[in-house]
Image (cartoon, rainbow, N blue to C red; front, side, top):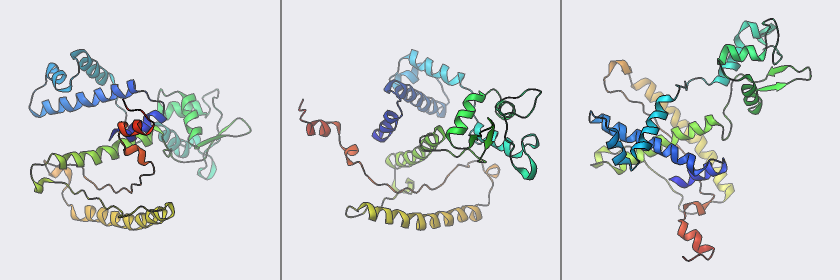
Length: 273
């Protein structure tokens, strides 16, 4: 479970120390949730079941209580771009976003003003760097800034994509964990795997991926239609209402060494002790 995560973290320059701190947060969160289900909360008990010291538990709780709430529905870059395309002050004839300078006097339209209006205390410099990085904004020859995209589409290994990775992984592991811990066959959640009975070439894998994208998307549309038409109760009409869905993935093991143990890898290079 951890090797793909470790590979991503190493590639992104995130140290073990940083990962360990995140792991502490997760351990404490799970332990607190278990206690709250029983109607109790005791920090010493959290330390006992997680193996952390009471000082570490206190630090995690203190850090969690100090965090600001960050809305997940509309990112700050998206809000800035939305304002640039819809606010009359920043839109020219025919609805085309104005080209604006980075800053301006007399409260004239500028990028700094745009960021202040739609992103609060966010640094205008950092916001501009991010929008240029994702290809949403370019600088023209007249030292003006032009918006060329309406939204901040997440790119590979961007914070938004890593957040999505966390969500998908959470749903996958939650299902697998529930099935491992089930007390009877009737309690299991749907989880099936189809595996090729022989290795495929890269070209065959590409063909298989195209087949899955076509058939899989069609199936997901059918499921979405069923959820829309068959479920009539609104969440507020039901005391026990939970989020649910289906995740479909195509996996290909291009790096088989990642599934090998550390001992196997060391023996390959001649280390025997």
